Length: 78
Image (cartoon, rainbow, N blue to C red):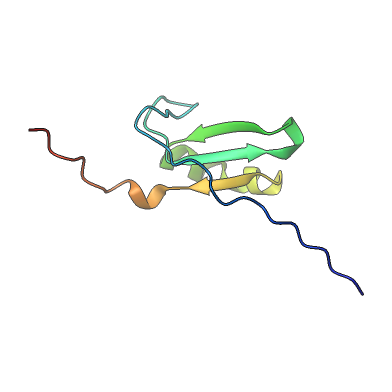
């Protein structure tokens, strides 16, 4: 048996403060890319991603999850 592997780039751009949830406008921490929709990207806050996670995964979405950054402190302005 022969196994073929494909190298998928792991250099997805980090989400910024300007990236906003497509549902509510809060800061986005998750990017979901839908292959069935020609690579359509959806942005979600943590709350709305949790609400839609199972359906996105079932649809084969590639998920870039940065929810670990939610509690990061914003740098102080001087």
